[in-house]
Length: 249
Image (cartoon, rainbow, N blue to C red; front, side, top):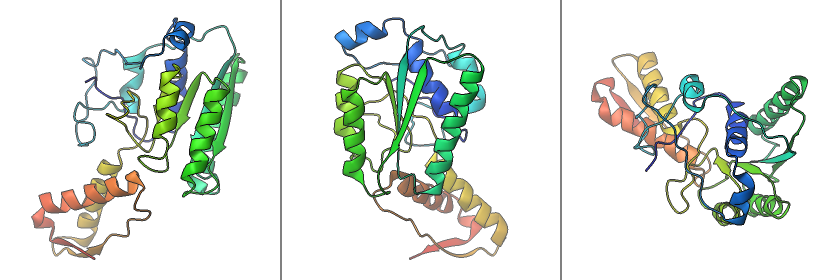
């Protein structure tokens, strides 16, 4: 299995990677006639590979090292449509992310890149799983060149993701990484597991050697990021009994 690329912390890289997937392959039109899963072939020998997150057993690459891996991005001389599928834009986190994408598109236009059309759509709320699936199917029918998706749950977009790959549309996911069923080679985003570990470490430092009781409010149970953060926190506590942290219900 190829090493997966994961970017820690920088929103706009999602856009760059999606462009890289769409533009760097000169056989894009052939892919639509003979669909296949796009596997990245990158030389990672020159950059440190992070192996903190158990969801990425083959490692991950930090944003700061990413440019040394993918190199220059070649943009084709044709119109390209990229779709972003967010969770609810009523949520401030996702609305800020959408603003960042729009700002980057404007920056690209000011640099002379005018052939990229980006559509940002979202579910009605953070629980509207069917709404997200409807959006990705609509983008497939409209023959988008690339889709960047942030699934609400592990499973709600799987049928749409599989349909997109079947017709040769490159997929980038955030929030949820798919190593199998389906296997999607690109995940761009935070390591929620590592975030949970860092929070546990910060609690330990704040409370000192005496430690104390800590209660975790996980949030929406089917949100994989919430589960991973919780797992990261709990694992750090188990690995550091000297912290004297006790997780209570």
